[in-house]
Image 1 (cartoon, one colour):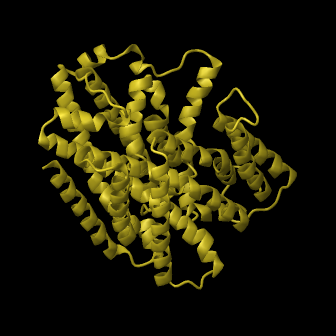
Image 2 (image 1 turned 180 degrees about the horizontal axis):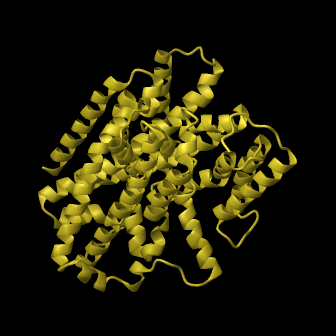
Length: 465
């Protein structure tokens, strides 16, 4: 019965995505929903930006092993990113009327920097997409006994289908429905487990002491690791195409900003539910022992809940994963089409041609991500590694370009390549350092921006500072 219910839900989602294709007439509709999203669609889409496999599977298993200190990256870092983007980036970027984040770098620093930024952004998304496909495969394996490989291929085909047809419109409309399913499913399971345990406070009393420790011990090394965890998603995802396209699809800059604030609050509160569910399950059913901790939540529901709750919970899981996957697929698609392929013939592409180029790129990106999902299956590491690439290379130029009058294209170039080179040197320990690799590389990126801009200043057109 449960597999049948899941199949029906997936078919409804695909049908809804196909129906959304009626709104897609131009490439702008496909990439940014024609900048027409109202507050409720925009906020739900932003909430769903990262509320997928990492929050439900990865973060819950990390929380059981390390307490709150193990999940600073997500959900806390994710909520921080949405808040910061709303406070400092949404309005000035919206005013630029750019189609992609690559175009923002173009307006700030010129075509060459835009190309560099685009090339650096694209690889990061393969990790995001692969992580969601792995999670989808885990669910199908737990429910239907399918292999990981088969589950990954089925999930890729489903999300590709409705994103291929409806683009950002399909993502936004399905996100709204999926958000409702997520909230209902997670709250239902939370309430059920609380009642079984005798109340929330009973569960909290039985939890290990480290479960609610929010700050690290007063040691320099511990605090560096702590701040580094916040920075991975909290800062690293600010210069990302997926958060850009979701916020810029709003019908106005004010709507975009309000949506970001709502999504941040929503992400933090709902994002804590999987942690509580995992803790409750471990306390109530300590006999559950799994080789893969990421399977704890689905196994808990399968073994100790009624069929209606199973349907609600797995519907919530699938909703979270599909919403994150679809936007992660569209983000590099838009960047490749708009900032790499389109300039080859400048403005001679017709809208019909642009739409098909977008869709062909979408298929290619999906296939690459499927291969990556087969290669690496740890969800938390897939997401973290993807975010760090953006943090060390693109955050500083974007921030400086918007708020520092002296920022120049040379400074941006030094910052992008300097930060990435430093990260690789630190990561592979060619240069051993006592600090987190990504924080040290971010510092190098900032210093490179300052030195390059002061040594080689230059006028910038369309500067917003």
